[in-house]
Image (cartoon, rainbow, N blue to C red; front, side, top):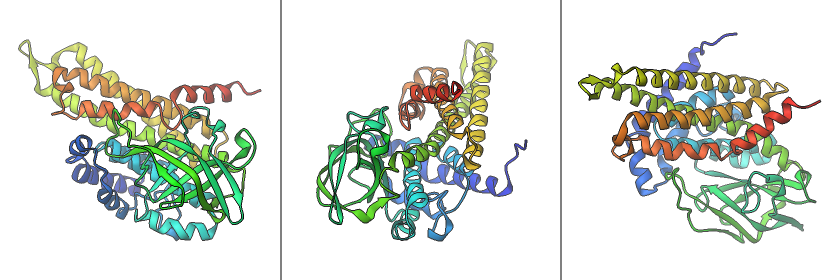
Length: 379
């Protein structure tokens, strides 16, 4: 076992850290307050190779590993959790096209996705199909050279703003086997959007319903074969779970450092907070639990990259632990700051609002436990 990062990994992690400190952290509070989607900043990140992290090089991607991606998202999220998380979604959608699309499809979309000239969204969840994603109802009926789509997708990051919507739709019968994957392009006939959702966090990215009313989509936009959609979705979500776990780790790491600094500076009862053993123990537990979650996530990334048979279970384990631990560490850091932590003058209340949703999306943590238990109890 080898725990040291390579020279290249250390270099692009440092690049991501520097970008987060320079181009994300100084603006994160303003973006949150104004609900501003920083597209040009995302395109700056794309110039560093962060929009096609594990997309192949022949279409403009960086062709890095899942562990490399985790390192990058962990570093970026220390600057702005919400913006880093959107970049994760864009990467996941791009990877689906790269891995399952035809060469023509890959060359049509991926070079512009890698620069974020095109921005991607991922559409799986529906108003009546959240954790039970295989029950999705959005229907796609083949009509000549086009599919006609009817249905609604819910909680879509980038809804109304993105150029590409990688959507899971029903082309066949009930259940997972009837689901296919289609790319819907901005401006498609019959494509519409709901009002922008008013959210607790993740305010630097827009979220809305994506609505299909007799929407017409070329059959040439089918990714893979009919009936492959749920397989594509699950494989994409394995990586998405690692990325969102990494975003939790990065945010929590920044919160831990803020708490450590505050303890060294703040005085009460004539002593620095760092001299109170109760707070020393709390800080020690925060650091220990965060490190344990980080190591599990890095291991899961290695297993996914190398196609281990139990990789999906480890991705579920890592997502569950990293997002639960991330939230708890941020919450503890806020508590250490007392009333100041509750003020918007400090980043901790925003950190807390942003990481809370990580325990819900990319598969709720209760679903992660189901996946883990199902794998453990297989006969």
